[in-house]
Image (tube, rainbow, N blue to C red):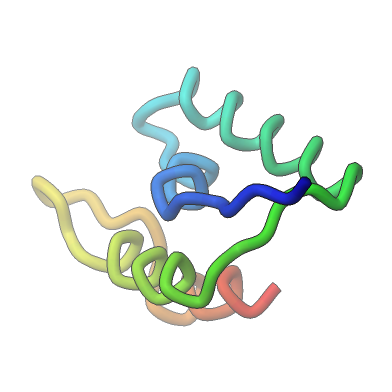
Length: 73
């Protein structure tokens, strides 16, 4: 049975402010991709771009170009 990926998992995979969460998110996504048990909803991709490109306390995770490229891949 497939599961939907939450936006937070996608964001934590690239947010180096939280290395422990980053490792967990990366492993979860790798496992899900290899086993074909994860699905990424369109809404999560839209939220991912918004969350990774807006500044939070002066920190921006990705440029708009990089966020759109990641979402496309």
